[in-house]
Length: 463
Ligand code: BES
Ligand code: MN
Ligand code: MN
Figure 1 (spheres, rainbow, N blue to C red):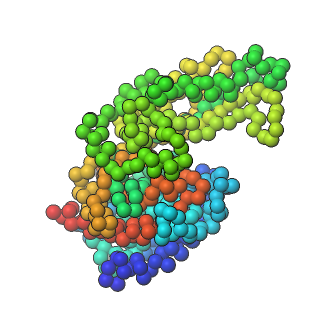
Figure 2 (tube, rainbow, N blue to C red):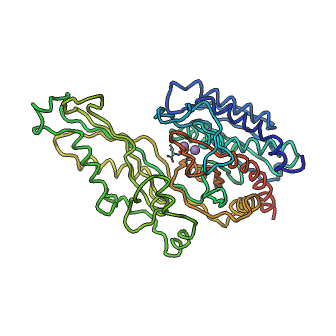
Figure 3 (cartoon, rainbow, N blue to C red):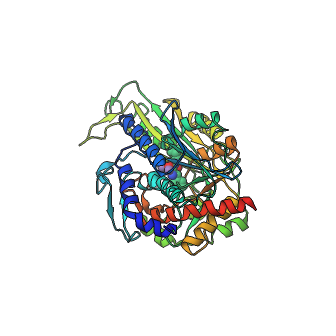
């Protein structure tokens, strides 16, 4: 086995089968009905790291789901890469919208993935991307080309806020000491244009409850005379954006970093077609904050979105009723410098203040995290760029993503190291959505590119 390309070709079927087996376990961290499956997945990941060649692997117990930790230390004088990923997945619902069952992976071709894609919950986010690291490591061990030390830390609560991982990281700084953190849990521009994610948005996630009368009421007998919590809630929510789609919460933008003209011009150079964007989503027009482009709106600008809203009668037919309560789940994507706890407080105060006297309002924060930006002059970034350039034949473009991996900011705070986000997913892979999939090309290309990161990082580190 001379090189990685050949190794990937020779082991392709096995790499696919192993990933498919992992995808069959429904490790939904949000739903306690799947608790045993989440633990089974942790064990499967542990076994895979042992088999690939770690010297030491363990399941670290936490207040929540275990963290899979593994390592291969070849020489303490060499640099150490800490690989992070997650083995939990989002809930599969709405299940009816899947073309095939979410935990029975199948391979199908798509226009974007003519070489086939694996369809399953977690295929791209993050089992497929995490498992590329296990297979890349297997290759480096098998070919005796591992150039540095490596530690793996794979968690099971990323999709629900990484609470236990925060707990674990705060208590294990020495164990987790490293020179760079490497994560594949983001995307790239396209299969011909790799990109490296240099920014993630922060997040504040809250739930609101509006209570009107103490019981559901006949909407004829009482309608017009008491506050309808659903009417009130929707009005309150609507008031959170003004006519320019700016968020109206006082102080919300105070710490938002405005990018310079030059930085915005640089951003605008990335390949992007608004027509293709609209077509892919079947929308006639885009929508968002006045004065910003689509790429800016979904990366360098903060947002406020209702993720779910419920209350009253939603069954078949009509029921005339004024519900006692109405609810919504609201997420705010934040940009660097905005503090998620501060924003959560601003939201809570504002939401309570704008409620009419006729209702009671309860705001419950769920979870959150800080945003992240990473410079492009670090050796980690350079190593990643060299790796992509070699396997794709073109340089990677730095891109700030709209998604969040809140734990990344905590890594920097607690472990004092930078994170490199080498993602191989595509926006069209439908993560968190029905019919999530991951391209076979992307999976194998990731396995091919990762060892080169190790190689170039070690070389640049030693210089
Ligand atoms: N892998 C995603 C985040 C992501 C995807 C970042 C694509 C950039 C590009 C991660 O699993 C995720 O879904 N994060 C959550 C936050 C978490 C606290 C639930 C998110 O962004 O909604
Ligand atoms: Mn993820
Ligand atoms: Mn996710």
